Length: 284
Image 1 (cartoon, one colour):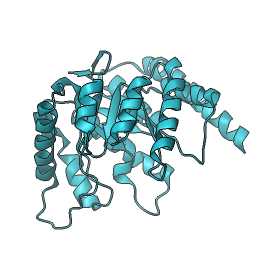
Image 2 (cartoon, one colour):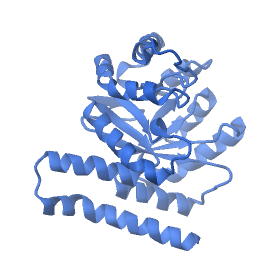
Image 3 (tube, helix red, strand yellow):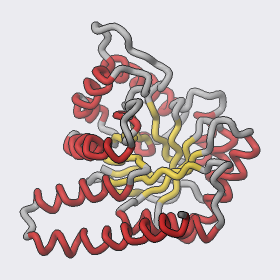
């Protein structure tokens, strides 16, 4: 399966990782810090990087931060993406090297369909995150499938190439754990669309009062399950942990000997972990 990016085709025959970078105005980066962060993500096993800006920012602030980060990312091997539903941001991002847009509104904002068609960006259509399932009789999978049928038709009618489409069927965090687990358990059904699938982790399993590190065994298990269900891009801030889980699983699945596991995975990930510890010690 291939995804037609803005400037090239990319093979999605295996599960890849998209690193999330939140350009929080309270936590600004220098060009050197961004270069180091992206290099660390490369070392950990990411293929894509997704830049997002807090919703509280103005349009001009968001555009400036996104474009600056994309310019800094040009020295990286990671494929750049932006998380936005705003056509103005999409257009500016395309001019600064973005290859893919992740749209939480699935191109429903005015002008979004036309902008993606004009710029040639690939697009990840996310299911409506404002939809909440409350009744036991509700079937989230049927609702998500119906939503995607409508959005895919809208894209094709807008002359957006089918090979540029990626689907993220995950329901909102306000849905109950039962509904979210039901959706995760049926991810494989969305392969019937014939399009690559994406999901964001650990967002789908976050619960109040449960520390982030304590969640990671659950998140890693979900990541492995998603990989087996046909998810092709895992979007995450926990690149190291999820890459370790996915890569270890595939090496073991291929019946590789233990020393190969150590050589192929351990050396790179230990190096990345050492860098993380060094940065943590410097900040203390």
